[in-house]
Amino acid sequence: MFTAMSHNETPGSVRIRTDDGNEWQFDAIQKAAQFYDCNRSNAIAFACEDVGTLVSAAQAVLEREDLTREQRREIAETLSTRAVQFEVDTSVAVTTKGQM
Image 1 (cartoon, rainbow, N blue to C red):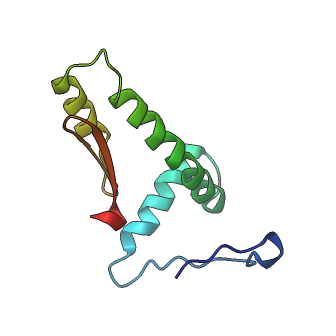
Image 2 (tube, rainbow, N blue to C red):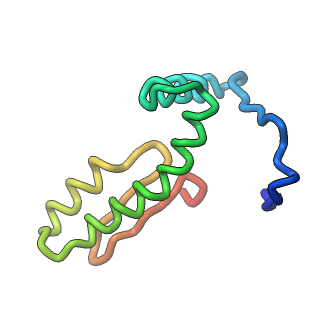
């Protein structure tokens, strides 16, 4: 279970498993490092900080009144990823991998 840690309890390092079927994680981290043009550690932090902002922005776009339902569905399909699924019905819903 995840619990919030105070700043003085921050670990010196965090390990990410890349074996036993998790090899894709290393590839994803490498892609993030190339995208952000930085080291892998910073890339992970940048991606983690960006994802909430990007999902909120996508949700705001999908809730715009000037878009048709079909446009919203196309945008939702385009923006959906392995871990985040946007769905449009009469309202916009966001489902994360943990909720799938």
